Image 1 (cartoon, chains in turn yellow, purple):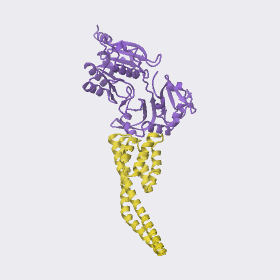
Image 2 (cartoon, chains in turn green, brown):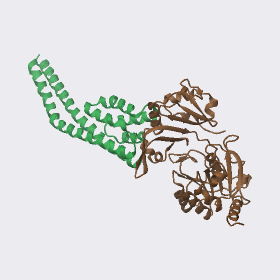
Image 3 (cartoon, helix red, strand yellow):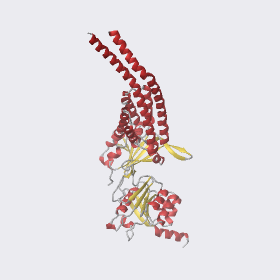
Image 4 (cartoon, rainbow over the protein chains, first blue to last red):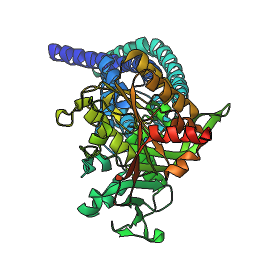
Length: 174
Length: 328
């Protein structure tokens, strides 16, 4: 009987600990994606201002160099849709922001900033495009800073809360 | 018969407009010369020198009120399709009022231009697009060639004179191609040809590749202003022949004279309804009096685009003009 109780208690504690770990990790994932998106927009700026690459080419180059699956999938899809559909870019951009990036632990604010990029992307001259991309990148850098602070603040906390809740449940159920 | 891929051409239009045009008969599509999109105005096409309006049922009408109204959305989607959602790539072309598409097709653009220090720096609010179907008529210069070659098989410097839409550019393109290939049957020596294609109309370069056949020994200076391009070509490309379109300014004329004085043969075109009209254009006067061109070909649409109305020997004309000026 005692051994069954011990196994049950260990199961509860480890489950809660893993849950805490998962929540803590999501803060790190958001930071990684935002950092990657900032990096992606730096490349986009270069592609637009110096290489004069069309957006589909630029997006596919960004996808190849992306470090997170979120950014890689998003830009690869943008490149694919631009090459294969007649839909206006802003529609494609909004749909993919929702469908691809919405799947990851980004806040509504983050998605709104990324979605805003699609509104004027490709529609003006080089100078205006660079200004537009820079503004969005700066907004993302702000979100990245906030995400890093949150990550530092809550990552350890979530791990500890997970473990503590697990232990509490185990004791209560004993 | 011109060679072009109508599917490739119409793929540049918004799906709504594409659907309407695909509904037109094959005969109409085959003779299509232009498609004109104007915001909140009827969709129009030009064929055989006439303008027709495309109805919402995909039929042709001469009545503007029967035409399908091009919406803001149709125009914007079309702009995104032709620019691949990247207008900034075409910034320099747009400043000149056009875009070049795959296949060498050209789109004229109208809208609100942005100026800085009285120079065009961009365009916003695009309100009209004019799709011109560039036609490549292989061999259209063949009947003319024997008259344009001297006894040593070298071409004479030739000026092509006609009003718009009479086939000047098509003829120049085929001349560039034939001069580049050479023709033993005509005694035409293969020449190193440079096309100075300021408005990307002759070679239709897209992504660095001429979309029209301008010959194996042809270099293309794409989107390059004529005066600079001609001088660059003389300095660095050692051409036998320079081909360029639409001479208009005194700088163009001076550059052509430079080329001729450097031993290069030149082929060019000029807008004019007749020789008399051409003589009234002050900036082109030196061309008519200083033997830059050996002869001129006059074109019209009388029996369809490319009708040859006459060939003038300009050297004799220049001699005559000089004698008249000197009161001989």
